[in-house]
Structures are given as C-alpha cells and as structure tokens.
Amino acid sequence: MQTNEAEHKVEIIAGKTLEVACNQQRLGSQWQEKTVEGWGYSYYELGQVGPAMSMLMAYPDVSRKQAFVRVGGDPQLAGYNSKLPLVIYAPKDVEVRYRVWSAAIETSTTPRQ
Image (cartoon, rainbow, N blue to C red):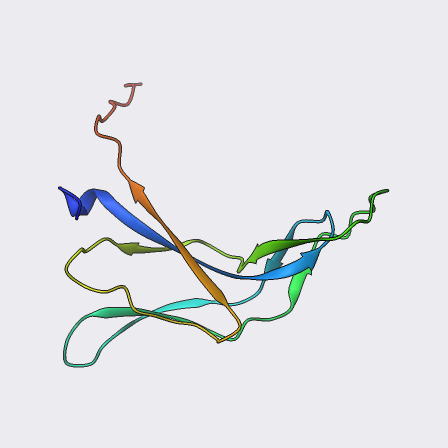
C-alpha cells in the first residue's frame, strides 16, 4: 500500500519472448479499457496480437537471441489502487508484465516568459 495512491500509476506491458536479431521489434495490438457493467470498475483487454514488426537494417553480426518483444503503441497506464485488483485479459500466448510509476516528491516551477 502506498501512502498517496493518486501519485502512482501502473504501467501494463504485454509482449512475447521471441528469437530476435539486432533489429528493434514490436508486436501489433491495441489495449482497451472497459468497465464492468453495473459496478463501474475498470479492466483492461488486449486484442489479438499480430506478427512482429521490425526495422530492416542490415547488420554484419546476424546472431539471434531470446528477448522480450513488447506490444507497440502508447504505454497502457492504470491508476494505482491497493484496494482493487488490476484485472487484465490477454491472449494465452502473451506475457503480461508491469511496473509501478511514482511521482516525484518535490514539484518544480516553470520559468515565466
């Protein structure tokens, strides 16, 4: 439990562990925030995940390795609430990860122009 939960967000990260070369890769899909009818609680649903998209740069070393490839697009941020579960629906072959973001304690002023 965090002291001021409004100052925290949860980033939901979906992806797959794939064999990749040195090119940057992303998977295609879209997050949707939905509401449980009659209750007003949010949940998150990830649509079908398409094939990996990659930059087609030629590199001399073409060795491949296992790496986590994220679903592309904007990060999905959810409000932090220690009293409610974070409900996520994703395809079976997708791994869901998360990280908690916290606001800085101090705020800064903007310069006047």
